[in-house]
Image 1: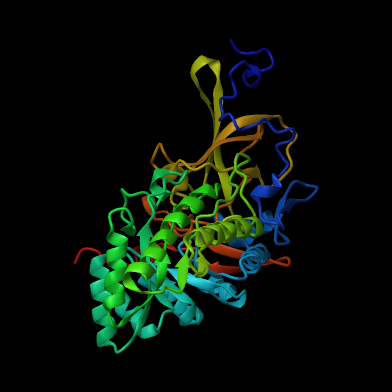
Image 2: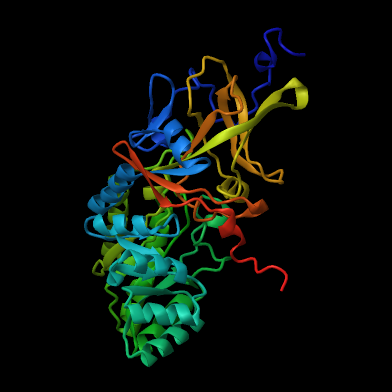
Length: 466
């Protein structure tokens, strides 16, 4: 039975996840979810980098990815400084553009790419190739040859086929290529199945347990055109617990010691990967770079002492942890409807002008996001809402559960924080929607880093009926 004050007051009406709490004021931002310059003015308008999002949308349209340049650079420097004794590679797969590659170079980080396209961006940006690392489980002949000719700093090999292929190409090009061997440590990271990458039953790396890691090292060391630099391990993404890194480091360093003992080969480097988590919602509590550096360094030092080996030079690969919180996505609300649930409950569905084509993570990974009304202040009571897109797909959900003002209406702007990683990178043209632009904001000014697609772009590859 509905409460006399309305459905929102009825028992069981709010059926969000256990971690979601009703806010005292739905206008307030949760600071840890947003870039450091984000705030709301007295009228409730969300401002990022000194630019009100109402003005940004008026100039650039919606939806739009909004990248806080100062926040991005600050996070990049935080990793560089905290991990001063490490090589820090920005994982370009999270989000990469020519401007971002230049920011990374200017802040003193190296760059991790995993395709010919990402390598092209690095080239266009003038990124120093000796600071580029090339990942990927199925690099083509052309990609490897291009990487060798460009003189990339190191190639992370992922299969016996690739070792043979790279050795042949390097010999043909008269080059000696630095190589890291990606190994699978058999660690089950506490994350979604599709982003846990160190357990055995998946496509990446050489199994340590099965002996494939040692054999891969043996083959690289035997190839005259390849220079064995060390082992590479990556346990997954959106990781908060350092215990996974501890187990992985122990197993990888044990292999490192075995290579020295059995093959007489001293590998000077070891890469611990990335996957450091960020706060998408209030349930997330990520560590800062300084804490991560302290914990990971202690782990490696302890294991090296236990094994009686010299500590190799270390590297890490943060991507999400740098760009994720630095970007938000702003949408315009198109429709709002209340949907009845079982037991007399209801949920407010807020449809926006984007969706799974600009953020596939909710549908793909069951990811959680937050949101806020970005264009005005509301005095209405909060209601449990779900932000959905405009695609012809029931799973087209951007924000599964969040309290929104009860008077949210068509024409309002809604902003979703934490969309810097794997949103624009994985964007698509599903239903022939146009991919949004990336707008950088800083010191009260905005500029386009990646322009909005046009219908001409959409049809450029459609050759018609020939």
